[in-house]
Length: 192
Image 1: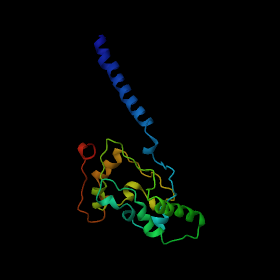
Image 2: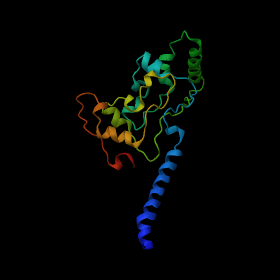
Image 3: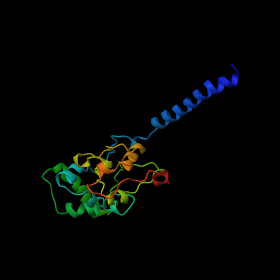
Image 4: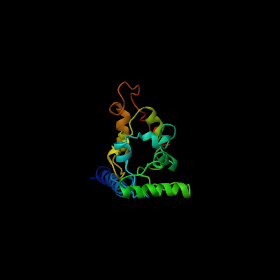
């Protein structure tokens, strides 16, 4: 057998396979924790989506006011919390202590609370909340059933395949009769 034949039949394909496998294994293993399911950073003040969005039925957009008009849904300013909490005291004294921290921060310094992000997109991904919220896609479609959580954590896989599956067939995530049939699937739609 000619040495060039052996190279093209055996060595080159095996070498290419090794390179591809190495890229996949390294890419998957070095993924930061903030991109993984179950990621739940400790927050400066315990906040329960279960109590606010679940028990009290507060809509996501009440606190995350920029979701329909900005790329980012944003964390609410302290004044949004104070719209309700300046008038309430709770029977549970441990929770009341946390609310007192919020009130003290508001009254003394007017400084924002340093919440830690739960959902992160890699820097090479462009995501715009506006398009999704204005298409009436429920927040739970991407963020999971946060209204059941006392501690916010990452419930949904935010990998490209998940986004593409929804863009190709958004019907399960849209209200009945929605005019949206498909989302864009070209690279530039999400990678700018």
